[in-house]
Length: 153
Image (cartoon, rainbow, N blue to C red; front, side, top):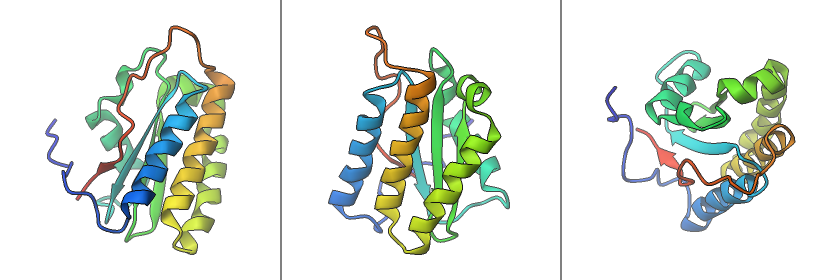
């Protein structure tokens, strides 16, 4: 598959400090788990269902190649105010659909107040808590995926 869905220039909606806040939230969350979290942000969702878009991006980012299949993608379409989460089979089997739906409804409150960076950071923290419960950090663990935010079109 083509990686043309990625852009090098970040969306201008976030300040440098806000971007750093999100990346630091990812790093903090991953300190206590073997799980991996990525954040993908774009302006508009190309699909009617943002979960379908998150699924496409998850596989384009090769997130299915973590050792324990415990990668989680947080997908955000800012202008459309849509979010979705896609967890790999390892974490999804342990948490189930209801866990992710509850997290999604929580972050929507932040988005309704247009506090995007704080909402994303809080959501990443909560994802990390779920991963820690099911996939605690082991001494042999290493960071399998980059922590930087990926910006789409």
